Image (cartoon, rainbow, N blue to C red; front, top):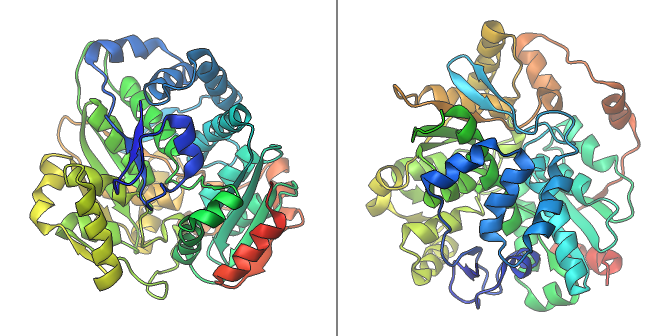
Length: 466
């Protein structure tokens, strides 16, 4: 299996080399040269596998340059330490919740990051190199990455986050770490400003090469492929053996990475009827899938909401979907992003029907009032407490139920990460165990920085591994 760029300017590369690159040299994103496929007989064989075993099988279709025994060792190291079930499923009020928050940082990002930490270290050891990871987070990516990569000798992490835009819990999960290889940088602005800084430095090929820069944001190939696994896992547990039952998935989405993995699973042959994108008030993606026009908002127009991990208006992974939408025509992808730069939007209204008819993607928006009402209704009906992002998913899922089609909602995080919103919704003060309380009370280590590319360059040059 080889990987090419959405913009056509990268020679095919194997999995390990691609995941160390981040952005392709031409500014595009890596995609499989040919999407692997899975048939019904294979799916049935996979029903009896544990989660690490299933991860080995699915990831083995993408990472063909990694010996199977090495891959199995890495998936075991990534998922077997989970304290309980890796991905439990439970029914809540007409939909099935796919539990993706059982990892060390209580968020779905752990599902990919725990594997990424293993495979990046493996690739660096094989290459005899180091990697300085430059990332941006709106909340959960940063903590998941830092907890997966802390203490690793060949890796240093520079994680940008927007000042004042994350919950207190999210800040504590990141800023309480004092490992020498972890550098937290709080940037004046919003998530998109952080993401723009990452793209600017990653697009400077000389700087990227000399500073050994890589990425762990959702553009990283290892994250996308690792997330594909739980779509297969959830389908295998939500359906009966021997059948070919279609299910739908609702995915709270800001950067389009999580739902893109579902799109990959569908393209591989998994029987998915609908992929339902749930947006918050920063609903640029919902507008795109309803109108065909993609028009990102400025930093000033990006709202601070009670589902902060989705406070994003420029979805980095949308480019991978557009590449498939235009029949893998790299020139059209380049033109679309040129239009974005020159006129602030691109227009695919002529392709709008294909979003649903061919690719099965629909969308909806949830507001602060919606998520409070959803958290309240789920709690009153089932006794379960769900986090605000998952509530966005449940709200939009309920609007897209179809008779006879199971609806699975991907959980985003544990409610403890957003205690203030939970209290506002149901009046309950969530309890923290001893470890979580110690984390919240620990000293915080963070560098505050203006939205300044040169200041960031200087900081990286001073602290990067070489």
